[in-house]
Structure formats: structure tokens, C-alpha cells
Image (cartoon, rainbow, N blue to C red; front, side, top):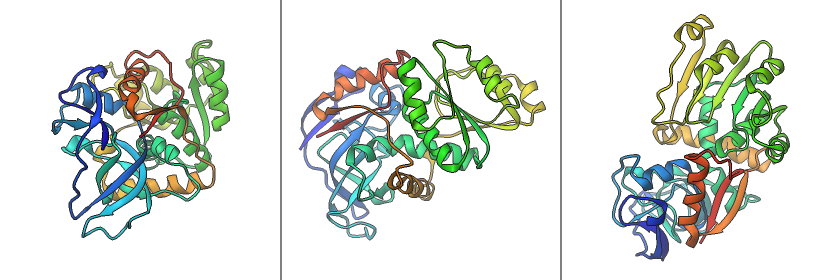
Length: 330
């Protein structure tokens, strides 16, 4: 089978594309014929070695996938051959990643794809969708009528948060850079969009939410806690899910005086049951057209190295070159 893989951690240019053996499945796994995959920041960190992981060699890169069940292990009862599925492969635990024509995945991490949803959309929403759901539902417990601020409303996670928050019934304020992204963010459902390139975000946010926001969802790698806590309402909840190396100062006084709470989490530590609960809502919203994965472009799997290089410009260099996810197809 064709696959995008590395033989040792390194830069994007270390990604190769070529033939590897078809994976064998265990009794609890499913063999998926991959229809689409997508790129996430965590993929960059694992590939580069920034995140220590027990990787096989060669290592097939990638976390997200969508496709069709080709074979099932003896103990798998949830799926049968021919079913369409999507999910997030826990590749940092020693498994191969998803950037291949065929992928072996533990059945507990897979979810059915609604009939009217494309593989490209299911792959694009996988990791970012479950991450967004865990953040606003499990952690922040966002309620109808509350106000949420999303820092970066057209990114992978940010665009999912905007749409999910609207589906829940919240008022959404988001940031975006430039007229095109501001328009895209409004199209996703944001009630107020602040152009961080043309406006003072703190001032604009004060005008849009004079009493403060109930939930502050941070997607940036370097949080400004003075800004965030100043923008939050009493008993506001802040969610952080990025910035492994960030060590910002933290204003303890204003934080506890307001009775705020800080919620940090990562998808790979969520249980199968928690991820399935998120997937159930995601599938319902996808079918109802309340959730539309934001895709920047679709590329062939053979261009995985180029896709990683593009994602690095967005994630590590803050160039703002992408609007949504990079999706690849075999």
C-alpha cells in the first residue's frame, strides 16, 4: 500500500511517500480503507520529535482519518465490512498513523459517518471537532444564552467551537485576521467578529461584552492571561488546549477575585466513552448542517511533506496562511 511515513523524526522534508506492507489487525481492531485524512498541529510535534512518542520505524504519520471498513477483528461487534467510519488514531501510543491507503485502528476510537457526510468532511472534523466539544461541553459546560469568546474563529478548532457554540444556543464573539476571514467567521455563525489586524481586540471585546464573557476559549499557543481574565465575567471559565512550551505570567489576584476557573485538557487523554459522546453530537450537527468543517484545501496524500510545511507556517510561525484544515486523499 502507499503511505506517507518517516524513518526518524525530523523536519517536514523527512516525510517520504512510498510502499509499505498492509497492516495486520488484532482481534479488537478494524482495517480501514482510507478515504481522507487531515493535518493537525500535534502531527507536526510528533513528526519533528518535539513530543516524545514511542514510534515504530518506519512510522506512518497522521492522526485523523475517514474511510470504509475493509476487515474487522474477531472481537469487534460495532462495525462490519462496508461501514463508513471516522476517528482519531492514537498513534503516539505506539500505533501507526493514518496517512496511508489502509490503516489498522482500535474499534473504540472509531465512529460511524452519517450517510450524507463526505469522507473529506469527516476527516477534517475528527480531532478538531472532538477537541472543541470536550472544551466547551465537558470542560466549560457552555449553556444556552451564555457568551463565549473564541480566539481564532477560522482555525481548525476555533471554527468548530464557533459552530458548536451556536448549535448549543450561545452568543459567539470571535477574532479573525483580514476581511476574508472575518466574512468566513460570520458565515460560520459568529455574532460578533473582531478583525485583530485592524482593531484593538480588548477594546472591541469590551464594547461587545460589557459584562464580560462567560467562556474564553483560547486557541493561541501563547495566552495573554491579563487580557483573558480582564475580558471574563464573574465565574467565567477559560479553556486552554495549545502551547506546550508556553510559560506566560499569570495574574492570580484578578483571577480568584472574579471566581474564574481555568481548564486545560488534551484529546488523547479523553476516554473512549467521552470521545464517543462528542462524536454523537458531532454526527447529529453534521447531519443537521449545523456543523460544516472548514477546509482550506484538499491535496493528494503524495504531497504530505508539503502539507506539513504549510501547517508549520500557520501553527509555528503564525503566518495566517490557512483558513481551516488541510485534507489529503490517497
